[in-house]
Amino acid sequence: MCGIIGYVGAKPVSEILINGLKRLEYRGYDSAGVATLDESEFSVRRAVGRVDALASLIEEEPVSGSIGIAHTRWATHGQPTHSNAHPHLDASGRIAIVHNGIIENYNSIRTFLEDQGIEFQSDTDTESLAQLIGFFYAQTNDVLESVRHALREVVGSFGVVVLCQDAPNTLIAARRGSPLIVGIGTEEFFVSSDASSLVPHTSQVVYMDDNELVCLGPQGMQATTIDAQSVEKEVVTLDITLEEMELGGYEHHMLKEIYEQPESLKNATRGRIDRTNCQIVLGGLAPCLRELPRFKRLLLFGCGTAWHAALVGEYLFEELARIPTDVDYASELRYRNPLIEEGTLAIAISQSGETADTLAALREVQTRGATTLGVVNAVGSSIARETDAGVYLHIGPEIGVASTKAFTAQLEVLLMMAIDLGRRRHLSPERTHRLIDELTEIPSKVEFALDLNTQIKGLAAELADCDNWLYLGRGVNFPVALEGALKLKEVSYIHAEGLPAAEMKHGPIAMIDPQMPVIAICPQDHTYAKVLANIEEVRSRNGRVIAIATESDRRVRDLTDAVLYVPKTHGLLSPLVTSIPLQLLAYHTALLRGRDVDKPRNLAKSVTVE
Ligand code: F6R
Image (cartoon, rainbow, N blue to C red; front, side):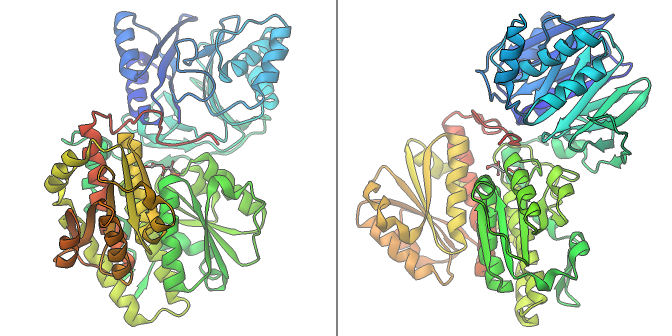
């Protein structure tokens, strides 16, 4: 959510910034801008829309220098207009900043500064920070002190990079709540919202923590708290490759990531299954291994797709580990004064590890005494670092804004955690063996499901004109119905709803007509007969049913308008295969509607504001 990049070194900065923004664009794409410094003169360019628009502007009106900052915006305060695009300057034009986050007290800062005669140029919260730094700078002539002073005054969240005309070799960056990573090159530094823009330049990085500030330049990197206490930072080696971030011949990242699933699901289990001893080995849980059998209650939380994974997790933990499990939206959890009993293990699920609501919920349950685990993909992210222990997905970067491979890997990791906890309690070796056998077959079953692509493309062509869709599932496939509906909504902008199949008759059945496709997920598990009955209810109201069913299920074929057959697997693992056709259906439908599937309107990959 908003991408930031800054550079200081000896190279021409323009290309570094634009290429960096292109890699960060999935974090927001409402507008983009750069500010560079050359011989103590700022060059500022801003454009509404995608980074390409900014790149074209810079081709016409080049910027020079070897220090600069850049930003791609996901609008929070103020429309995506030219004047609201970052960088924002103070009234003197000597300070320029890019910012990710929200300055919550921007109104009072603005009123105070306007009373001092300062004129604002934009509607953004960010400009109040730029102007406040400038206000203090006008009094002290000390940019570092002014930044510190301003950051002590603001309430809210920020990842901010500051450039000052009078300090032409220094970048100042600070964070509270919004991620920032410093990349260390040879006599050069980068600072960015995430690692994706650093990978082409360096693998050596430093993750900034909340309330830290760094000064970067020829003098090296000085890390302190915002309050000027010095801090020691560890240099970490990134394990992301450039290849993982490229399209690799696919038309879209979403499609590439859907097709990566046989491999990503192998990677998520690699080295974690010990068949000989019939156990799951999750090294990341080591810090709380001894405590594990003692937990009495689990609390899973996340947002969007991660919340859907948590809902599947609830079935898995209750069934396999027999531990009472609750699931909450991260965004609701912290606002309802949650009761965290002693013996609660709270599990935060997040692909990016930076989602502000999930991070806030994590901190809330920590202060109330819960032990916390993370199920996270982005290595070194805030949630990964702030949880007591956790399990990484190990599936490489997910770039497509709609989450696909992270969802299935989250399910797989939660399943492994449930088996692991189960083994420490009552789960028998026989049952564990069966689950492990099924788990190792999942990648080839996902490959089989991917072969449905051509059939799904044809189906999408028949359905793409329908404006309302319903997704039905029961048991572990109820969250899959929610996820299928979310995928369709976010990439095609079609209205869709997911429901537990039996709930349909309590109201939504009133909407059924031939124009509303009903996607029914009905693998042959213990819910099968009931879902078939729900399908009958739709048919008797002239509804149009598309089933996701177990291969060679003839009965379902006679009851529905189309069937997408997936391989048979253990009931608890079925979401790993039933999700695949739903991802492809959303993808093809969106393409037929002419949508930009990798950058759907109004969305951003990593939601770092609450
Ligand atoms: C949907 C999607 C979002 C994210 C949600 C949480 O496709 O991508 O709903 O799942 O914003 O993001 P993370 O997992 O990064 O915390």
